[in-house]
Length: 232
Image 1 (cartoon, rainbow, N blue to C red):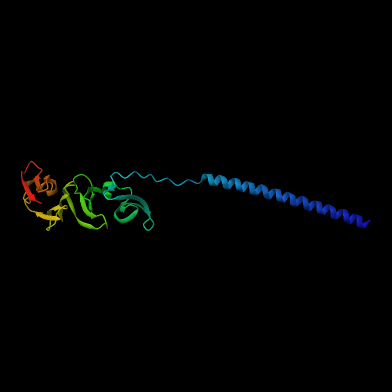
Image 2 (image 1 turned 90 degrees about the vertical axis):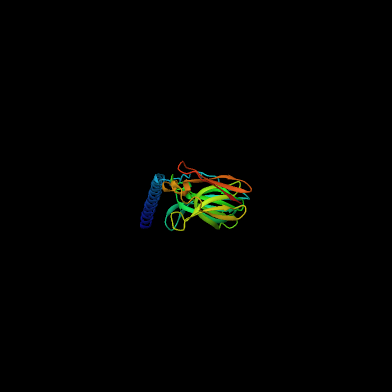
């Protein structure tokens, strides 16, 4: 009789344990489902990072003989700021970065092609109306700067450049560079113009005519009337 009573009691205990275990598993599964649902809701609330809108570069980038300028925008990991640059490229090979500035500054501040002379090209940076156009004559094969200064005028077809070296300094010089014939002249015939008192020499003169034999430069103001001829 005692054995039967003990067996019944043991059976009841086992049933009770199994029921509690089943209830525990169900509660655990329910808790997991709730947690998963909450995690999904929280994940849906996470904001997606804003997409950076980059305007296309404003100027032509193609140069002769398979060269071009590559416009790039990227983040400086050291200063944690956005930058933009122009890199001289031949085919698929980077040659040299020629300009870099903060993004999104104006593209004309970053620079643009002002003339293509075959083995070299004119790189110009502009900083607003009335301000000088800063230039660099750059060799395509290696990106080296041959000369630099302030633009006065140029003739791309005949490969002639008129510019000021060291503007507003004691050593200021007006230079006529004949790229085709590899000749350079320091021009002093326009040093005493009246118009230089208002806008500077760069606003007073222009390249009028270029032939195979000569280059004619003249004043471009009502205050002065000077025309000079220079043989190539």
